[in-house]
Image 1 (cartoon, one colour):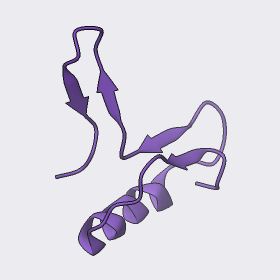
Image 2: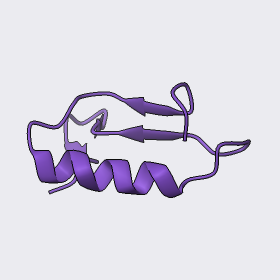
Image 3: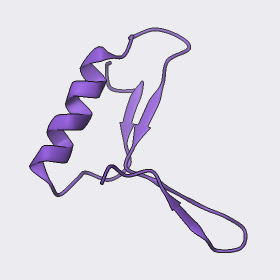
Image 4: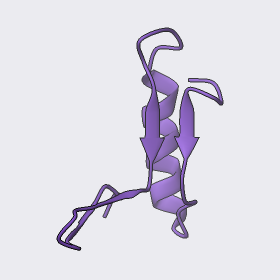
Length: 55
């Protein structure tokens, strides 16, 4: 998947996470409707955080 379709919000500090994300990225289609965002969090109106970062 090319840049513009894959957005990295925050780079991972861990090499194994970066390798894992790249493996996923390489398998995703590079056409509509496909888009992806990595390493971000959702914050609810209540302030609760829901991470979307690989662990």
